Length: 113
Image 1 (tube, rainbow, N blue to C red):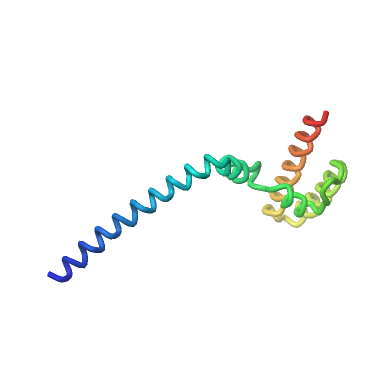
Image 2 (image 1 turned 60 degrees about the vertical axis):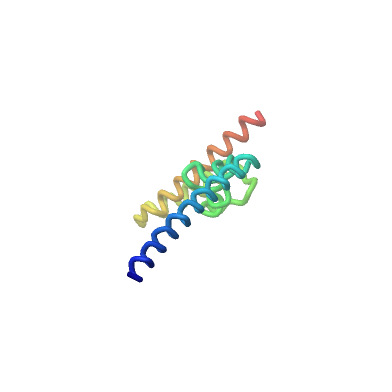
C-alpha cells in the first residue's frame, strides 16, 4: 500500500515538474523575443560553417584588419603543408576559415563599395 502511494506521488510530482519546466521555457522564449535576444541568438548560432571571425583568423594566423592577399598567402601555405601530411581535418578547417573570411571580406566591400 505504501509503495502505491509513493509511486502516485512520484508520478504526479513528475507531471507537475514537467509542466512547470515547459511553462518556464515558453515564458523565456516570449521574454527573449520581446527583448530582441532571440534574433541575436539565432544570428550567433547560425553562422557560416559554424565558425566565427575570431576562430577563422586564429586558424589561419592572420590578425584582424589584414588584407585579403595576406589571408590567401597564409591559406596557400597551410593548405599545401597539410595536404602533404594528409590531415583532412586540418585541411577542411583551413578551407572553411578561408571561405568564411572571403565571404566576410566580400560583405564588407559590398557595404562600403
